[in-house]
Length: 327
Image (tube, rainbow, N blue to C red; front, side):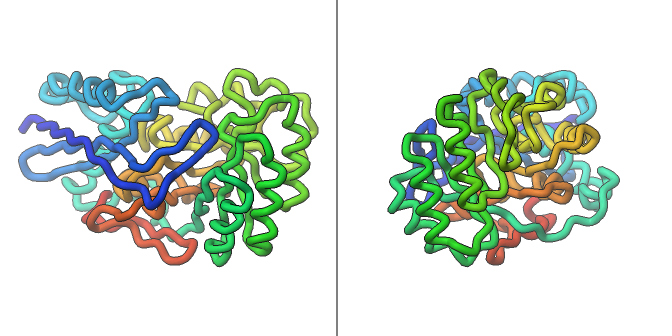
């Protein structure tokens, strides 16, 4: 039976607000993709992201344009050539993986030739705010093993110092979200090193990160906005020590797993990241996280509520999904 396609836009309120260097938001807007073959159903969730020129309308239209090809027999392999990397392909790709798992009554990790996944330690995000507000948020989360601190504005040295004082024993990652420039780069990296930060994500804007190549980096630096799909990896050499692999950038689990292998061959440490979304979007990323040195899959923890059958979070651990959710 030909595949049928269903699409839905869902809005999930964020608990409070989520703020980074580019702005704040109060809800996560996601697109849920369902593929049905008459007997089994597969689902995927993607997040259209304006930073990459995506809108909900454009992502919906791109997926809808695949409907005739899905009816004609397009499969997951063909999808990789039929669509570019991005949120739209991610939704379909993850739905294909889930559909295959349901059809064969086998977990996705087996279908992908991977070992059974285990629980991993995830970061928990502290949004960009005034130093005293970030310190209070860090103090409330100081029991967690790993915090991800959003920076990228004047006064970042004060922010990271305040956070470290409030959470003296917690490992810290910093994410500047392209918010620094060459004038403050060395000083901010030094402030992060002083605070014992273990990783700094995307300090400089994509396309203007050449200064990293000639810099003695006191802390490992991770590419996020400078890394998209597989083809973007070679340009990271010499500038970055790690790469943040996100399904919405890679265009799905298929290419994300290819990126893991390529990054490892390049000597790049792997970070498994996410957009703010529900457990349905996180579930495939848990497989990427098995190879990651750093994991940031806290999207559902930032929401006022998660979807039914959501991932299990216990303190800083996130557990693999159950089949009722995905895979």
